[in-house]
Length: 105
Image 1 (tube, one colour):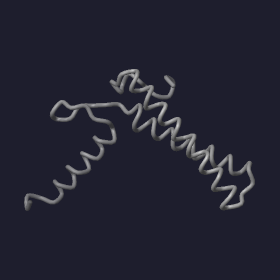
Image 2 (tube, helix red, strand yellow; image 1 turned 45 degrees about the horizontal axis):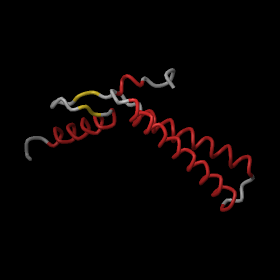
Image 3 (tube, helix red, strand yellow; image 1 turned 45 degrees about the vertical axis):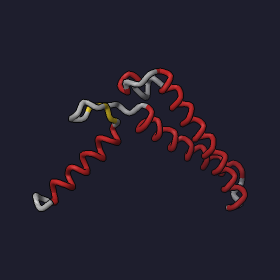
């Protein structure tokens, strides 16, 4: 984990990181089970290709959740409040949209 994500950049307590890490693991397991069940039952795909599809979906989901939620570097906004990378990106998009509209508001 430490070779991929920097846990110290999150400024989160170890217990919180462990909890979030565990939730992402459970979500990956659920996606794996759902994809295998849907692929074999609904789409009538053989077990091995269904497992490959499930493993790919599992990896992508868990990696994205951990990168953008669990281990996201946290900065501070103008009020000194910590926020995640996703929140900063959304805030800057909203500011840019408001500035583009001009002073007619």
